[in-house]
Length: 110
Length: 114
Image 1 (cartoon, rainbow over the protein chains, first blue to last red):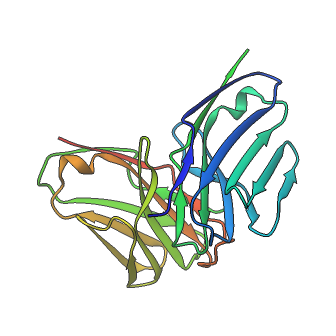
Image 2: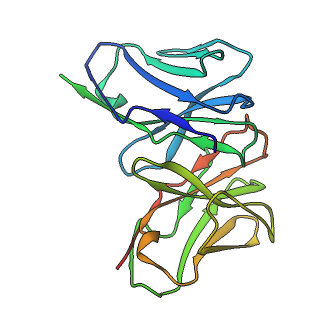
């Protein structure tokens, strides 16, 4: 079946940039998403990118898409302690056909 | 702001019990979803509903059923709970089924089946 893979953990120093990577197998996915899950909370959509784009920037967040390599990344500039969370990569072509990765736990060290 | 609430944050049940998980959204959304979240597996769709009394199976419907009698409420039912249904259950809702439509998630119900 279709798959979305991401590393389980990432640790960065406060103030540095965080880069969370994701690879996927479904080349027909039209939308690619990044969700954030803070402790004890549900998932919150951070941003998404349409498959015909290769970059999207939104304040401290930059999403890069390499469609040829089926690689998606999320860069968080100037990482803060409030960015500590689990980040989920997801791909899909309709709301009922979204495939989620297993999540990357981002921890921030002082 | 969209609000999705789930009836319980934590639930402990025994094997064989019938379990009801309730989800309510307050934004008149057409679509509601139930996922389970397991470590290392991400989220997997159990069922979704696109209208009152309408439902569709997701990727892992076995052992579950759902009910949507009112637009704002979507219930997940474990007919006979088993230990492999111990998990975090997340409910979500969206206005439309289009891929670019944001899904709004509830805080989750952590279910332990003994």
